[in-house]
Image (cartoon, rainbow, N blue to C red; front, side, top):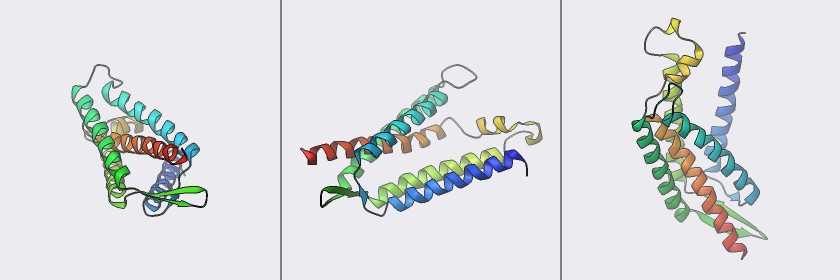
Length: 176
């Protein structure tokens, strides 16, 4: 088996597993753990900043105004969804531990946006415009999206970063 296809299968398996976990966590009670929330917030912030930087300042140089606008709109929409979702999140104390259950509709909406964007990206990689035989794999990956699609992925990053920060604040307020 070609290493490129093996790597793709492995990547798809990892992404599929993470999507499964995300969907499952949308419907069940989760323990409110500050350490886990901090780690996820830091990781998602770094990855989100990388997406933002790549969308606004692409490798070919120059500033892309459409990407900048779409990214800012995506970040704002994600943050607004997170504030609304936090208001709809249920909290419960069990013994000494706090648990929360996110709003399934909002979490599901963000997951569907992410999946739609991911499938669009995969479709663009597998069916590129132009002569596909003349393109390398990296060229397919870089040319698979438009300036507006980066804003869609930043909705997810902004949502989870903001939502995790709001959950950490809630945890601190109930401990005080």
